[in-house]
Image 1 (spheres, chains in turn red, yellow):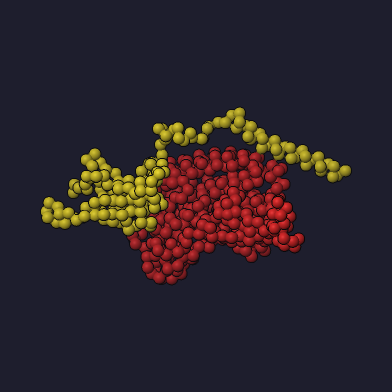
Image 2 (image 1 turned 90 degrees about the vertical axis):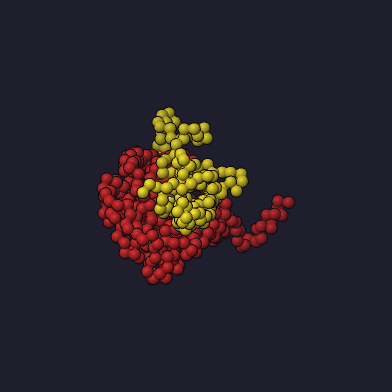
Length: 375
Length: 159
């Protein structure tokens, strides 16, 4: 009986053996289906299938006003919700040529970095768990909770805070905001070395992460892999450095570049970025200028007819927003160039030739958020 | 000879790296420090959300059952999901002029994404965020709420 089944599946020696990983596989962190072609345990090639949670956010934006569509962008990359909001807000401010108060710029940049930290912490949890280290999951979430508490106190929600509006912020930050961030920086500086002791130095983890998923610099540029994944291949693509926005031109920070090109290099980039985020936060948190939390905006925003483009650095790479306006109060066309979409399609290139167990580590190292791919 | 040395250094390095991780977990096992876990369903009586917590939309009423909603419809217009419906009447006031009075301020919690635009844009501050977050119910129709209490009236501001 069982032999017959196997005979049915494996038709001949030269036929490809194709299995589906997902759409409900826990390591894909969402509904992503990878059609993996195997030769024994080795991946010959794989085809990602997307679209399981396509919600048509770009199309929905065309039916909403510029204030209303902010909350839709939260739902793309929900782990860097603030950066997504900020990209849309900045495009509106550019188009209307509104000068945003300094206070707003500082607070937005602080939130960017807090959000990036929270996102990298969650990635660290999940990456450890993908490779079988359950401890890292709890330690990462424990520290992430502190950031989410700061968010909850100031904006009322922990994950999807549509806190920025075109022209500024929805309301001013909580009086405790600065104090809590300073407490958090002090706290997290003592906890981050533990991450290294727990996972980075671990021999089992290193054996699994080193030397797999090689992505050359050419591949990264060719596929448009941005963010920490691209910087792990020595591809300088940090929008915060290339085209500073917010208060990034007022702070000193390094763009983290690694030359290892493998899973471990991408891991090291993210770990180093956490330290950088902490130092950016430290430089900004004491210098928030006094002032209004929003610029004067008309209640109904109409962009002048034309095309507008803006890009920001989310926790996963470069998010670019492109708006075509015909002068009405909602956009004629809105296009998001999301980082995860490009990062996903390099999978075939970098996972072919490695074992199927390495596929989990490789997809974890790209830090994919599936709603951002499908949007 | 070299490979033998390498072999044993690898074993030693591996064991020391495992020990480094075990030391961290061991430290927390014997001295956990501040316990951050909340015993959620048990601590319901003492659980206090943040002041700005975005629970559900509520319409605050004062002791005389008066609210501040004039029925202008700005929240309905600003809602991206159509989760607010306002049914209003025109009622003659004391001077014989027709005045808009809300009949029902209907709030569909099932469609709400908690973006906060209605609370932000309300010109008379009639709406606010409540602290309630346990929204699970067995019947979908319970998620459609009428925000103005029965018999409530518009608060007339002394001018």
